[in-house]
Amino acid sequence: MENKRYSIAIDGPSGAGKSTIARAAAKELNFVYVDTGAIYRTVGCQARRLGADPCDAEAVAALLPGLDITMAYGDDGLQRMYLNGEDVTEEIRLPEVSMYASRVSAVPAVRAFLLEMQRDMARKHSVIMDGRDIGTVVLPDADLKIFLTASPEDRARRRYEELVKRGTPQDFDTLLKEIRERDYNDSHRAAAPLRPAEDAVLLDTSGNTFPQSRDQILTIIRERLGL
Image (cartoon, rainbow, N blue to C red):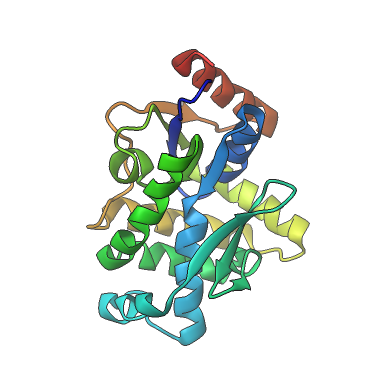
């Protein structure tokens, strides 16, 4: 790849498998994987810890000056999130943090606060970055944009299986309801609503196994970028 840096934007709804698939693709291509959802979850985690109403834009914005959010990558290549020096990688994946993340991500001040952090990663490295508005807002000039999706039922099933493996099972119907609610919130928010970029490649992984989805996205990347 010589000295050229590539940027790949992967957007899509909650539970579509963006993080898992993007991480695997980045490892295969020796790119840096950036999970922007984890960054917003870290903001949501702080709001939850401090008892701030995630729907109160002023209250959430007031938290930002006291936030020090950093990312690091372990020997396993996994992205770890630090909140004011504390590793919160596991805490931000708790189900109760998910809705906080969705709410605070709708706050314009939060998006502005994190925007430069995300763009700086793409300037310094070849990246696969996933989130809700990467191709439309964060990296509008990305070399490749992919909109990754799956049916709400499929996403709820994957989330259910993930939580069972972690030993924190939840009711399937509750998970499905939460996913549908988050889809609505993410697609109807005023700040950077979830939608495919006009030039994005649509990839629906409903019914796929993980290897099938990983191979499909790698094929798209290699064909479009000539890697």
